[in-house]
Length: 153
Image (cartoon, rainbow, N blue to C red; front, side, top):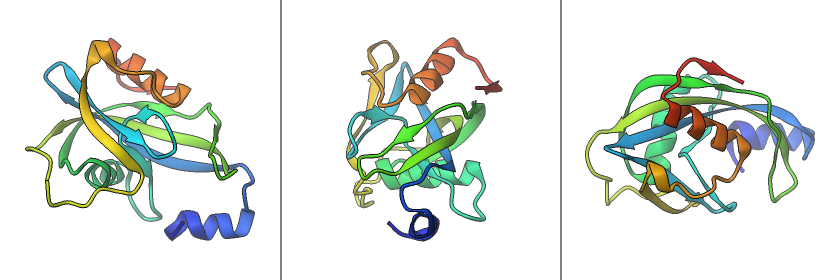
């Protein structure tokens, strides 16, 4: 673990902390981009917002790192705060997720190394999305499918 998360965890261990994340719901026709994560399960590409970074930029950066796809953010879906996430290594967070709608800006870059966190990334039909790894991502999906924006939970 490196960066801010590594610094924080070195001080608090596995204790529950609030962490800010940004995710992108990348839409292409009737499909959405999903990432199969090394921690298990499927979810929207995204990750922790680094110190000094804005959520929009984090969603763009994380999507590129995890899928090789450059995106353009088109809209804020919502802010999701009332959840708890337990990681396989014992870390516990209250993840505060800022979710965006986005569109791809061309095909995936085949020469871009993907994050070690990604087993697979692919577009899935909106009516055939597998069960997502967390309730938070399932709630984001429900709001995405319903066309909601400005959601806060």
